Image (cartoon, rainbow, N blue to C red; front, side, top):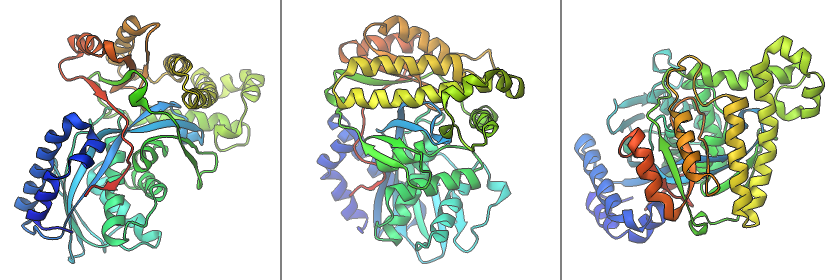
Length: 424
């Protein structure tokens, strides 16, 4: 732990570390960001000794669209956008967590029950993560924290998962000597979001943020997912990862998201199974008339998408491991087309007038056909698209996209090799 002066010195000398997390060109910007956060912490909480810095990244889903919640397979990576927190342990039994631009969350570690008035707010995640640490037998205690985030909210980069993983990384670091594994933190983060925040979600977002790097996850064994690093360096692929923020919002779309796992599990239930991972495509096709009558066409189509996209993850991972980027791009486009046509998560049926994702995909197809790849990104319905753009086309692509959606809406990112960590 460091005092204010020591931490400032450490930040100014951390060029190599910050370059690993954010890229060499952003080191100076990140130093200013970190120093500003330290000043904000000290101004708010006064106590400027025993300071530590923690970070948790946003994530990009690369393959497997809405497969994780039915114990499927995914391909994902952490990105160079993150939530950073300046933290100081306290002995008050209170957690005071101030996120830049948001109301401070104040939670007593002696009151870790669900609070109905906190549902959907950051305080519910603070309470939920702390409760889960206690339930799992880990030490908990009070701390003060000030955080700043450049993970776009409602972007499909999972700002909520990054926040949850950050909380878990802090509790692990300051009260458990950093011994809680990234996989355990991810599971606890999903619990907090499901039970306290009351948003149904799979485990991919939290796992990708917590573990870091490019990973493939097989959720077949729910309590023991198989996580493997993928042997591919995107920085040497000749392609930029471009996330397009169409300006859509995830607010009030919980029912749209919830309908996807709900419909898939209903179809699985028809066969006496709890999730689609236990059902085959042949079983669905053989009973398709009965399934249509009982659950409707959309549920059947979504289930078929799930089974096909599960297979595509295997194809994508094999392509990357073999250095075959052309086959990888083909699978990405196929996944995007399946999401649009069969999963049907590119725009919300409750708001069909807003179809920014559809428009962004159309523009990307015109620019990248035969050259790059494009698809809906993350949960869908609002938010972002994902594009793999030849580096020599990145400026052209950015200009074209931002002429439609506005300046700053095309984010050129890279895969970061670290998940939730203590930075210095």
